[in-house]
Image 1 (cartoon, one colour):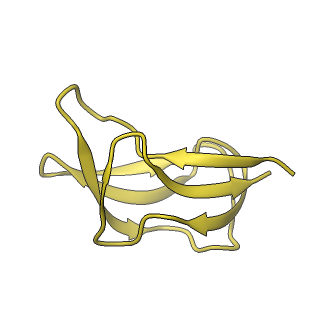
Image 2 (tube, helix red, strand yellow):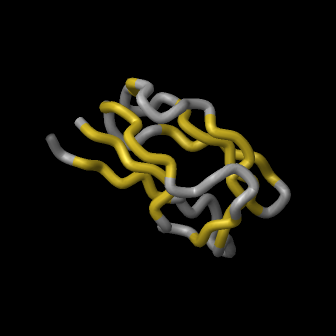
Image 3 (spheres, one colour):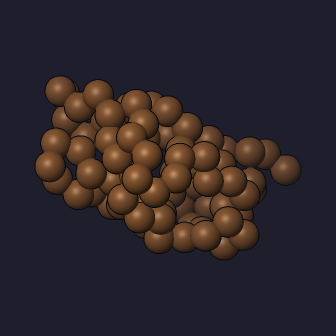
Length: 79
């Protein structure tokens, strides 16, 4: 099975990082491409990040309350 890294996307040109507010899925959950995975706060705005692929959420790398850089791995899927 292939592993897909879920990266923190850049929502705006000046965005350098974001805070993980709440995971909407748990490890072991099956997700579809485009399904919402996590809420992130960046520049005082909360944005929901969709899954880049379908598969099973096998690892949450960035925990709630953690601030991570843009394009950092925040989770991993297995498809």
